[in-house]
Each structure stands twice: as structure tokens, then as C-alpha cells.
Image (cartoon, rainbow, N blue to C red; front, side, top):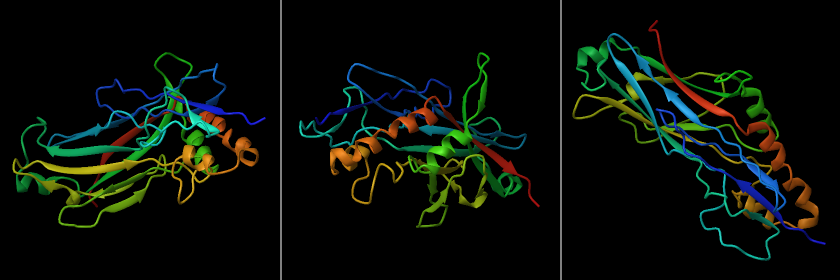
Length: 254
């Protein structure tokens, strides 16, 4: 007999000062069972005697959820639960360079003294055994990537004076260099750079036509694909509860 699979996704709002992203995993359950696990992305900047780099993240919640145009269809064998949020896989990181007070802009001389290069590094952590402690979780996320459940994040930004965006793949724990010249000066002499951080489903749950697991699996026959759909549990096991930290640092000039 054909059974219907119900998946449950919980998204949360981050409560840290530098708000990040509630990264919620997919769980396939029977209708009477529910699990809820969450994580966040946070960002930290740089404070120097000569300048301050402030990092803030907008979009408080990344949701690996149902399509925005989802409509309940009784013929579907793979459905989101009632509490599954609408998919949102992009966060925005804004970097701002000012004087150390965080308010006053930089003159040309100030800007010339800044490092020529900054680095962007993302890492994954999960709660440790002690209260408030955490442990490295890069391997957990990387395993989900290796199994094609999710893809490595990407970052993209349009540097000052450029028309085409620069796009780079993110490997957790590996620094990505960003040139100081990429920042754009505004009318207040503050220098800013806006970076899009994008997550994506892996090829185990999507194809070129269907970019969400709901659409993907419902385009396939139940009998041959129900077991594969349950691989979402493996994804849940690996990335539930993981937090993602973005760190921006300066790189000393040669």
C-alpha cells in the first residue's frame, strides 16, 4: 500500500547580538512523531586602533523548507508537515569599515593604512558536553556534502567599480581572501561590502528541473524512491544542532 511521508522542518530566529541564520534540518517522520533541532550562523568583525570592521548578518533564518509556491495536493506521496517553513537559503553579510568608534568615516589617509586584504572564514560547531561549550562540527557538515545531501555554501559580492559579481565556493575552515579595494565608499566616508551567503540542496534531493526535495520526489514514482527520500534522516543526523560562525580577519600586508 502506498504510504505518505511527512517531513517536519523547524526554523527559528537567532537570538545572538549579531543575528545570523536559524539552520533547520529536514526530518521525515510518521504523522505522530516530531523532532525539532536548530542551529545558527553568527558573524564577528575586527577592531583595530586605527579602524573598526563591523560584520552584521541580515535574514534571521535560513530555511531548508517547502517551495514558496507550495499547495497541498492529495496525490503527492511526499509532503511537508504543517510546521514546515517556506524555503529561504540566502543570508546577507554586510561589512562596514569606520574609525574605531564605529560611527565616523575614514579619510583617504586612514583608508591607505588599512590592510590590503581581509579574510572570510566559516566554520561549523555543535554543543559540547559542558554548559556553553562547543566542539568542531566541520566533519559533520562535510559528510553531508560528500553524500550530496547539501552543497557547500557560496559567497558572492560585487566589488567597487565592477559590474559582475565575484563568486567563491566556501570550504568550512578555509579562509577566503577579500581585497580592501572591493569595499565601496559612501557619502559619509564609510566603506561597505555586501556579501550574499547561499546554501543549497545537494543532488541527492534535486535535479536541474526540481530544486526542492518536495518537487523532486513527487516527480518520481513512490516505490522506487521512498527509500531514497528517507536519506533526509541521514542529513538530519549530521547537521541538526550545528551552528555556523563567520569570522572576518585582517591579513598583514607583505
